[in-house]
Image 1 (cartoon, rainbow, N blue to C red):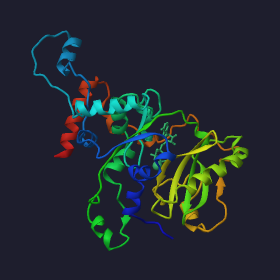
Image 2 (image 1 turned 90 degrees about the vertical axis):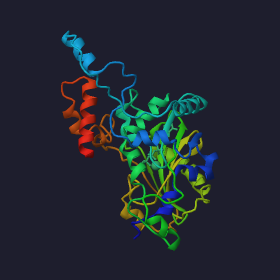
Image 3 (image 1 turned 180 degrees about the vertical axis):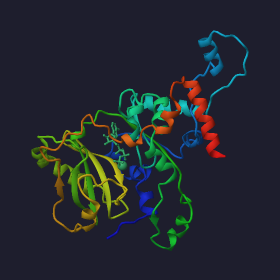
Image 4 (image 1 turned 135 degrees about the horizontal axis):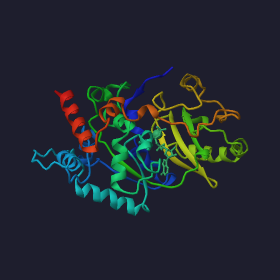
Length: 331
Ligand code: ATP
Ligand code: MG
C-alpha cells in the first residue's frame, strides 16, 4: 500500500504544470511564475503591515490624553510588496473581469475566508489578494513544506531529496478568474492506474437532487477524466465543477493522504482495484448534519497569543507589541 509520494508527483500537480496541459478544460487563469520576489518576501515576513500609517502610537495617545508633551515617534511598519507588483496584480484582475481567486502552486487560501468582508475568496484588488494569501496556513504550507515527507523514485530524483526545494522549482502565483460556483455540483474524482475509480461530492451538505442528477453528471465526469490521460502520473485526484452539461477541471491534486479523501478513507482508496469497472460514487446521505453555519478551518484562525496580546489596545499599540514579541522570539 503506497502511502508515500514522490517529489516528481508533487511537481506534476503544480497548477502551472497541469494547466499548461489542460488549459481548454479549465476556467481562465493567469500564472505568474516565478512569483514576484516582493510578494515572496511579504509572505515570509513576520509582523503587521498597516496601510498609510500617518499617526504614531504617541500621536494617538496624546490625542486621547490631551497632553501635548513631545515624545519620540514610534513608527509601525512591516514589509509590503512594491508598487509595480501591486499594479501587475491589479492589471490582471481587471483583465479577468474584475475578480479573481488566488492560489500558489497547489493551495488556495480557503482557510482564511474569515479575513474577507465577503467571507469568500473573491478578490477584487491586489490588497485583497495579498491579505488573503498572508492570512492562510495552507499558503504557508506551499511556501515551506510542500516537499516534506516525499520519497525519491529513482537515482534522478536523488538530488531533489537532499534540498528543501528541487532545483527546477519556483513558487508561482495563480490568479483564477472568479465565477459564481454552486458547491453542490463540485466533485472530487480519484484516478488510479489511469482509471476513474471513485467520485464524491466536495461539499459536505446533503442535496436531494444530486442522486438523480448524478446519472447525467457521471458521463460528463468520465469524459473529463478521459481527456486527462496525458497527465504524467497514473494516479492523481482531480476536482471538477459541473455546470450546464459541462464538467470543468478545477484542480489536480496528489494521489496521497495530503489530499483530503473527503468521503473516502485513504486506506480504501489505496486498496481499490485500479481495473474496477465504473467508479464508486459517494454522496452525502440524507439526514446528515448540514455543515452550513459551522466554521470551517476554525483552527487556522488567529492564534490565542495574538488575541491575548491585543487586549485593550489600539491597532498601532498592538502592532508595535507584536513586532517586539516577534523580534524577541527571533533572538
Ligand atoms: P483543496 O485543498 O481541497 O485541493 P485547493 O486549495 O486546491 O483545495 P481549489 O480546489 O482551487 O483550492 O479551490 C477551492 C474552492 O474554491 C473550490 O472548491 C471552489 O468552491 C472555489 N473556487 C475555486 N476556483 C474558483 C473560481 N475560479 N471562482 C470561484 N470559486 C472558485
Ligand atoms: Mg487542490
